[in-house]
Length: 81
Image (cartoon, rainbow, N blue to C red):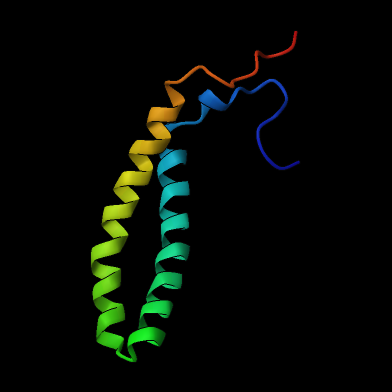
């Protein structure tokens, strides 16, 4: 089964899980962006700078975004008894 069990609410994820999820997604998105930058500019150096700047910046923003949403109760279903 994918995802949390029926008895596990979304807010029960650990910070480590959110950080790991953030890191993996950033790798995928950054490599995609770097490939686009290399294709459009024709320069590998531009793609390299894209990775160096974009990866930590957006990873931090995403992590804060995920943590902030965990504190919002709107849209979270109550566990069924």
